[in-house]
Length: 582
Image (cartoon, rainbow, N blue to C red; front, side):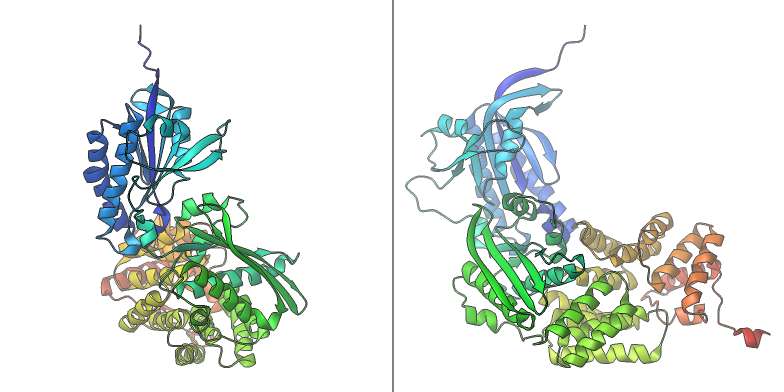
């Protein structure tokens, strides 16, 4: 007879996870994995063993441990947070690894080395109520610890936890009694904030690009302040229409504050509401409503940014916020054209964006962002067309953007793209570095930086960069999958390359060429020739000779790899006109 391995018992459960794990992975996947792995082996497992605990479950971003008493569990939690603070003192601020910890005393089920049950579930739920670098405990833990540890607790009241029938009283662990409160690691570093997508209240889905564009611009302006840590646009947009609470959003993104708002445009009038929420408490720190002419959109953005900065950084003043950026334009018409053009570029409809961006510049010739996006649209729509006049316009537009605003990240990105697709890898790298220094939160720049890594002979690094970006959520531009497909081809992962490239709704000509090349390498010559035929509808004189002028590689063997595959796909060495052939 097989002995039943299921046992019920009372246990103290410690649940912990890494704050902002997705963000850290997006910044440096390999580095984050290494640091977390070392912390688990050298700090976490050691402390748990010292307090007679047992680590029974370990995930990438967290762990669960069981202890024979609540005193040992809480003492271990305190020791872990002290260790983490010491470890973080030697790390750059944006690479600091922080834990949230929850401790519960409850009935659990042990089976085959695993532990589960409501006692575990409650610990995991209250862990999310702890501040970054802090500890939350249930009422039973608080009552059992009593005065046996030199600690103070803050009563958070009864909390209704997800999938837990009865409310649970929760306490937040403070500093040891009789001592001054020492700020946690998160309080010593700059305030972290996420701007959620503003809700389009206009009743017209066609106005969504305005709400999204204004949200993105507020993110960009907040990112200019080195006193703030701002979550990238595409990580924030992951939460569009999902309905999570502020606490849930903040926990997943690893931030202390959340900005949300709405926009309604009626004719020439625009109404924007915005509010800043302390996600740790759910309290509203600031809220306001603005009813203005649409022409005043940038004045509204300035007021929103200044209010947030002033609230979070006492040493800053609203005047400093106002002068942190040059006014991009005073024209609503120019700005509206920019937003529409930018949205088209996000979906690889670059040629359609060009007239809109040219219209924005015609309205306001000093609009640096419009010049930058025009350069991007012209460059990307002419990668294969090889229209010298259009590429000259792209070069001129990117140059003009930098002359108007040399400290604008998008202007440097536009210049980097131009150099990338004209084969000047060194100058391209310079402008990519400058763009990412000016706005490290811009995920689109990182996406194209992956393209630079790929063309410069570092396809493995490029794949890591683009996968980290795509992993931030569904609100990434369509062309990210194309960059991934190009990179997979360079790595000779042809099946994966075909899958990635075929997933792109609207493909640029360069993507079609790599799709043909990947199919040819898989032996699908019919499929490859069909793709080549599609590209030739756009550029009838396409040949290997002119492809080599734009699809540049720093390494000759990488260049030859592509050329051999395109030759196999049926692309001729050079174009011969039908008239000449006859």
